[in-house]
Length: 473
Image (cartoon, rainbow, N blue to C red; front, side, top):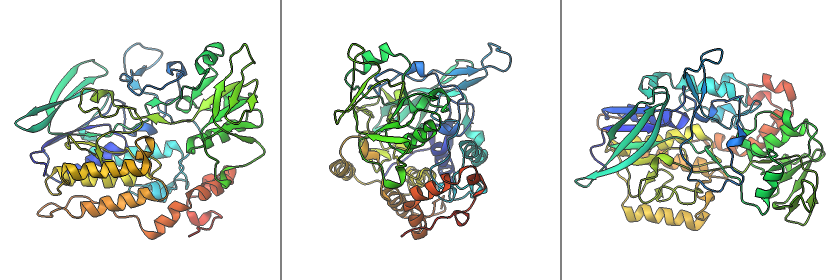
């Protein structure tokens, strides 16, 4: 059992960080909970940055071990040089709407998101998250970047030296903590694969290759021949938006065939993976695909290929937190560092319904660190990781939870948290997902399509009952 955890640092005040803060506070056990947020507000990845300087993107981008992101600055007025608000580029784009209906997306203890359209816009989600954070805002140190976290072991006990910097004053501070929650997200370092010829192609046609992190509106793609790489949620949505102004068909390069409901035909042509970028000496702006097809006169390519796991502030921790960037190594239940269980990660899994998942993770962490819930032995935790690798591989699918696996994972976390010794402290535990919610989860893609098909009328749809859609078991 982990003992003597009294002082905790949380990196990030986005949805995962706020969930962690609330669950840790509810234990009424810890003396200090400090939350460090490099942005000027809560909301994390849901903060929108209108400018997206794609010139900072390396082509290709295959190295997850990047330095800390440097902020850009929003001045108070009229270009004043005084530092005011640090800006960090997020992948939010102008017309982004959630791909999860609000009744599943909301936190278990705050239904106010259900006042919004069924699939809420990013502005509404950010407003919701800011409101949800109000009761813990006093614990957050904004505009403060964690630049290093070092392990210091004494008398067989791990402690963490957390080094922070006030981004406005540049004043650095160091403090020791008994435990650290990493809730900083994983939308920082984009993945752009090293496809043969991509370097020379990018040099010859500068600015034509980008990543979804830097997409904001479809306008720059007007009347252009466009390739969108990837058929995940962002790839499908961005491709759909670009198609409203681009040449037809838009070319969608993908490893796997998209489900039928995601395959409107007239404006899109499905293509296999890009095999090579042809040099200018052979053809003009030409791309070769895995099936031998070659497309000429490509004006723009948008990689919707995801992100690496990257934690530059943990670079000194051994064994390394991540080697390939495709997953976090030495991890138990997507949550605890096996060699250092006073280091926990909230929010590593993807393809999930996130907010409730974070609640389940935070409930377990809070109860383990308050000595009410034991961790398994190190061999047992290693065995879980080995089994996960055997099932999913040691790459990025390790953290992928599909086919209701996120719901099962959450319910398992709740069951685990409920095994805690009660005593005088009960803390917070979110509810399990219900059978009805599981059915809704399985129907999200069809639900989203029916919502989108309404066009502008979709903004008036606030309940599933108002949507012409029947849930299927």
